[in-house]
Length: 486
Image 1 (cartoon, rainbow, N blue to C red):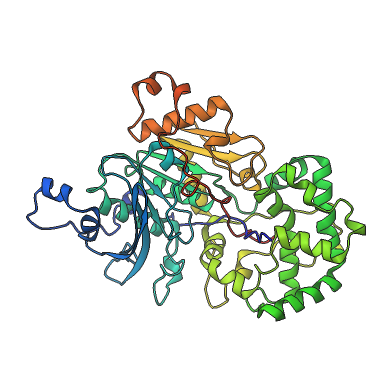
Image 2: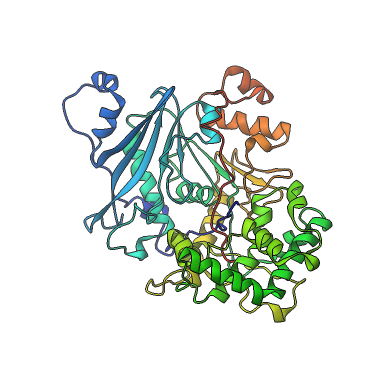
């Protein structure tokens, strides 16, 4: 069974004191010293060149035909404003093709995969790919962890230092990318360091400008898909609350069998309701309209096992346990301090059946970690994107709940776009766009990366990915993020 991890959101910053000028105070990587000529350095083995960067060390090299793939550690300041106050090791990976090719800078906003993979823009430009693990996701976490240093400016400064360290080696054009929280991360990086990248491709990136105003989500759920599908999902969700007592006995047995505990969320009852309220959101985030046939058609007459299995397949009863939440503590911390989190209503469920509603991120973070929300963080980023977006592309899925609150462009935007892939979910991509938008998006990515042919520059409709599709490198699951609450 597929256990859908949760939703996305998160990232914030002390923007009252953060400006682009302030961002420049981030610690800079040391310059490589020595008498080696530029020509001889360029001819050196790529691993030797990477390891010559101060603070860079090799964890592992994995072979892949046509590439070299490295898992590395890079020494970063815990606090980029005060680099003398300690460091930590941040994992990155490098999928190396050729220093003569452009480079794509990817982050998912969570842990980094240590297996070779290629994001869509990397395939489009046939380039190198640098992937970064987001700070505070293990093992890229300072010890001890000062959680006040987990904010969007510090994370953007991580990316800035990595870029500065690698740019002398990969000196062609750079394009940043990411999906979901990674799309948010790419946006925040561009906001604080707008001169680093030559383009940004952000997929399914939420934009919760005003945390307390979430009516856009209610409008989305009232209209998404078809009425028949919505009715099926709503009925199963309601029935799971009607049958709370017997199904919680099943949950207790399941938890005991697997050694699951509920200290962080507070109780099995709170965890149960959180999983159930995630159900409808989780379906539309990770499934397609055609998958409605897998949802029980007559929830009232379905067996307890059928209700349990449907909820578990979509939401995952293991998630709100201590063991399920622990890897996502950094995400919930950011959701509760900067990024914001969605709240939706359930008009088809009697109020008497809902005890807690959408629980705040605070409920999913251990109580010994202090949290305070910074409402100015997302407003700052949203305003900046509207007025300053340059070479930025946003791709959303028509049926993805996270797209209900999205980034939008203002009059100050230049050569930037927001496209929606019809019928797609949280896995929306350029390939899923309608033909003319797909061609335009592909052409702009090629242009930003400096590899658009004269034919493509004259006729964007001729644009196609430069690298052939690779079933191992290019096939991946939908961007899976924790579903913040429901």
